[in-house]
Length: 486
Ligand SMILES: *[C@@H]1O[C@H](CO)[C@@H](O)[C@H](O)[C@H]1NC(C)=O
Ligand SMILES: *[C@@H]1O[C@H](CO)[C@@H](O)[C@H](O)[C@H]1NC(C)=O
Ligand SMILES: *[C@@H]1O[C@H](CO)[C@@H](O)[C@H](O)[C@H]1NC(C)=O
Ligand SMILES: *[C@@H]1O[C@H](CO)[C@@H](O)[C@H](O)[C@H]1NC(C)=O
Ligand SMILES: *[C@@H]1O[C@H](CO)[C@@H](O)[C@H](O)[C@H]1NC(C)=O
Ligand SMILES: *[C@H]1O[C@H](CO)[C@@H](O)[C@H](O)[C@H]1NC(C)=O
Image (cartoon, rainbow, N blue to C red; front, side, top):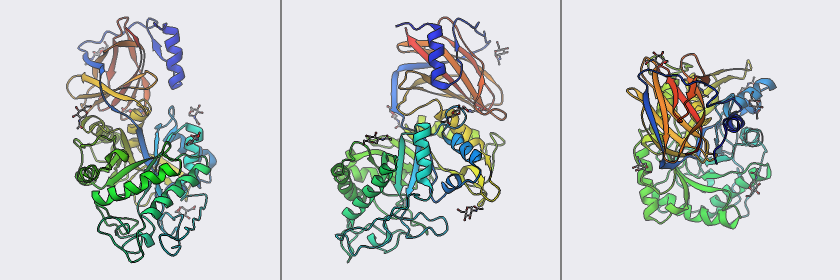
């Protein structure tokens, strides 16, 4: 079917809430020296699960307990709204393991040892989950977020070789981890299922479940160690337990949120050798020890946590290429999505207190004054997450000229998002041509740079489907295109 410009304009507006430009209502610009970006819809790469963030370790309370309700809604909009905020589509919640909520600890639903792995467990649900339940409920019901990733940093201490949920240790019962108290693998699987059920009863479907965080690091806070064989041991218990609970269709297993990509790659090898790779819906890794490159797995890959831990709080888009700047994060996301084929990309904390005054968070919330400040890192995510939606497939893209990097995606609704990042100091005129079975029929463009946050910018469409626009200096510019069949 050949859609009319009017129909296309209406369809594009329905998708984004913004009025689109459709040919032939607007005369195309005729840019001189335009560099062509070629998008090939017939060449496909990974399917995207989305972009996300965490509010673990009680950071969620900064939103849940925000006394100023107008600002509370603004914070939710900044994170999840697709027209005024970042439009994040994945939340990574921490499953608490600590018997209390001291400091920023996440409390567990099973603080007391019932007397052994075979004793009737005693779950205590506080209806808060360190503030994460309320934010998750809002994300799901107001903004339609569908991907809730529940991730345990540790099992409760009494299930572990070291008797506490902090300082590493192993889950009792996995290969090489024998405990006098017995084998706790089934009890830990039952416990994770119980957590998922408390969420379901509160209207939130957990869709991904991780049972390890940084298993290659023994932290003074909640942590549990594991190699790939031990992870496989537990996956083989957890997988049938989810199925038996009737949750097999709703929630699937991720592993292992390693500190670094290389450790994750070797854990995947071991999980594959042990015959458990097909039980994973995502291979998750952080990149604190370096990262990137191919992850040899059949499962989708998520870069599931990263941030600038060292730099002092910065809201800059571009100053000198520092680790906390917005443009740096636009490029970090690009590297993971294009060079490492990741399907999911998650920042560490969405919000955090002013202290420590680092770039661990996207938004700094001061709960003593009920004020907040937004970093441009959030807008770097917005440039991706608003337009590259869950289910989108990355497609071929090339060209753009010196200093311009491109990536293109076809969303499930047929829209095409072309992301162009310019690291150079001057604007570049580009034309975008779609091949591989369709051509552009309507277009919108958005830009983020030192002065603009996902602002609408000019782009025009010629009768032959060529889109013309400009990629501003040191910006990320998104061309959001509604194609029609040729
Ligand atoms: C980009 O296109 C505009 C509009 O045609 C033109 O004025 C401008 O000189 C071009 N810039 C470059 C760098 O070619
Ligand atoms: C997102 O922002 C737009 C524009 O302000 C607003 O109309 C819409 O209601 C917001 N969405 C939600 C779920 O609040
Ligand atoms: C949660 O999942 C169940 C099936 O597992 C489904 O019936 C229900 O509609 C889902 N709820 C939401 C809010 O998505
Ligand atoms: C990304 O996926 C493509 C095929 O979809 C493959 O050719 C390429 O090697 C992959 N790259 C990495 C780094 O995994
Ligand atoms: C701010 O948050 C911290 C940590 O949750 C809490 O201890 C403190 O009481 C809060 N302050 C105010 C004024 O609500
Ligand atoms: C995208 O990034 C640009 C910076 O190049 C920024 O001005 C813009 O606001 C961002 N926002 C969205 C939604 O793309």
